[in-house]
Amino acid sequence: MRAELKTPSPEDGRPGIALLVPDMPSPKALMPWLQRMHEARHYSNFGPLVCELEKRLAARFVGHGRGRPAVTTVSSATTGLELVLQALDLPPGSRVLVPALTFVATATAVLRAGHVPVLCDVDADSWLLTPEIARRACADVEVRAVMPVAAFGAPHDARAWDAFSRATGLPVVIDAAAAFGGQWLHDTALTLVFSLHTTKSLPAGEGGLVVSHDDALVARVRQLSNFGINLQARRKVPVGALAEAGTNAKMSEFHAAVGLASLERWDERAALRRDTFARYAGVLEAAAPGRLRWQRLAGGEPVAAPVGMCLRLPGATARSRFEKLCHDDGVGTRRWYQPLLTQMTALQPLCEAMDCPQAQAIAQDLVGVPFFLGLSPADQDRVAALLSAALVDRRHAPRPEVRHGSALVS
Ligand SMILES: *Cc1c(COP(=O)(O)O)cnc(C)c1O
Figure 1 (tube, rainbow, N blue to C red):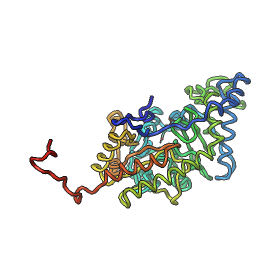
Figure 2: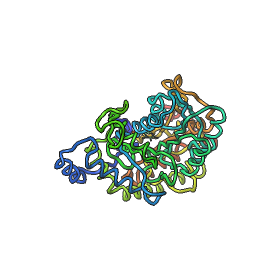
Figure 3: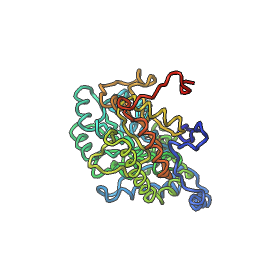
Figure 4: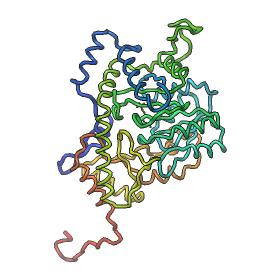
């Protein structure tokens, strides 16, 4: 059980507010898909539901660039990232540029693919690794691939990364785990990897999706996800023979059933996520006008389907004070993506680290507050009140009255 899914128990018995509550389709919504699975007697190995899900997901990219990209499902975004890296055939021990502010899986995928993560800084406004930062990093270190992260679902400028990729000859693989519905390929040679984890906006329980216009790369990832067994006729290796050393990273029909049910209501749920986010950000900002810092997306567009609410407080002390108030009130908070990858003892000996002043500054005061569909306006206001209480300017606050010899000193 992941701690963030539990509702904290408040000390005074009032219900707390969980940090995160998954938004999964109901058993009733799953039933028609499960029925289809049962009738087909096909439970894994690229069965009808996985193929249907892949077809529908590929169709989502039509209109956001040329034609229909190739897609393949995988068991998670993490295995997707690992297999894309393997399919790139970089020399063993290649350096791969990764932002220091991300979920651990971005770096572990690089390590498990036999490469060395080079941890670099992020942009102060967007909190993303940008092509400019990558250009500067590449002038100092010889990297062979770049893995930008759509941090907190914020999409990257695919065309800017494509220009970077063309100019440098380096493959760019975007960890777009939380950016489904907002990160597009356009007419680029990038590869995108999305997560269908239960905490993301298109939940299948567990699952991932690899998307690219490079058909051969996607076919290779598909083969690697099926142990490395060749699945295509017209290749030198016969169908069913082992072509290379892969793993089992297939999506099951059970997960595809959940993914299909989620996809059917994704647009409606995404709109609700955006509405909840907009109102909530508004009340939080009003609780501390001009004193919070928000992730700013290029173009100023909202995240397509936010799965979290992160804000920067005015300093580390204010953050600690806020976290304490939340904790005592049974309100979940989380320092998402922290500590930075550069600070993790399990990663330090295995990675190279560049200077990361912006990421370090963000890690001083970034905090995630409860966010999920069904977070009521009253609960949003409660978090805002805690924020306002934490940010009372103590220097100008009246000193508490101390009357010696009175009952107050008991
Ligand atoms: C959720 C997430 C992952 C991991 O996705 P899984 O599908 O659980 O493997 C990786 N990177 C980022 C940025 C994420 O948000």
